[in-house]
Image 1: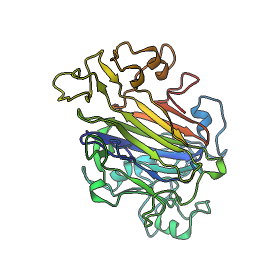
Image 2: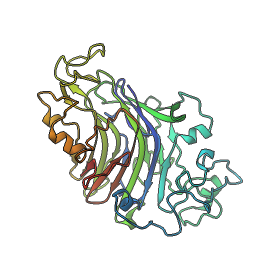
Image 3: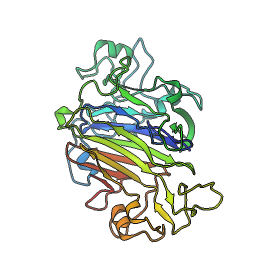
Image 4: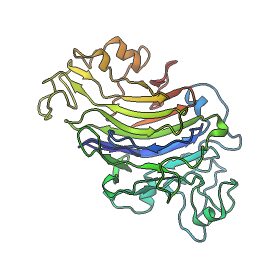
Length: 375
């Protein structure tokens, strides 16, 4: 089925639904950003930010910029459209106290389906580009990165663009999927996920070159935080890994970052009846016959090190979803809160990275010293 969300590729049925993604200045290095073929799809909104890491980790910390809150407030300013452009922050994000601060100096990228709603995009329309609504340049924007041309065009401060020029690889926009909001949906081209729909970051709107123009986070020791809302829906014959986010290394020393879902697999012939399962591939198994669970997983580093929560290593003989092995429970959380966080449901996922470690939190969950996703 499909994946809905930001970017990614789907499987012959598998989808990824992405609601929102943001990225802020706790800093990534310059590298290629692309959806990995083999995943289902992506998120609805993305946010890349620069200094939210200490807060995410559950440690008392200070704001990255003393003059700004991460959330809008009484003094928040919503940049107007320029005289030559009607592009501005979508109306649904111009509500004080309820939305992230779109002009926060450490907010680099924000991809939200609300921008398609604002443009009256029809349900099912192909997505060739996803507009960044973080730090839209306007006449009085204080950043030196906002040139006169960017201010006149109401372009974002970041020159990179999230795009897909190949028609067959473009995801689609779907309306009213979660809480009345839309998503960007990515679908696989085959059951193994070797082809499918994806968006990739390119250095400029016209470059055709994957990656970032410069490292926007070098002044922050290559620390960055990515927030995204996504789900991955596996079809009964899908296999392999379902990619959600893939930041490939740009140099021999930079760390790669990968977020993905494992396929559910069963002991041969133990898929639930009526699902059309073949072999070991299935979306659900006879309760004690799982050989891998549907979980969110990450990879990070150079070479890539993974934190895989599917329990495949412990369930070769079949596991009971009602009573998973101790090793599985330990990977899912501390005693009393050891929950399977099924990737087939929408989750808010936060990934906080630096040059050494990656910590990931699902729906704000960080009740233990080790987060649910950790490398």
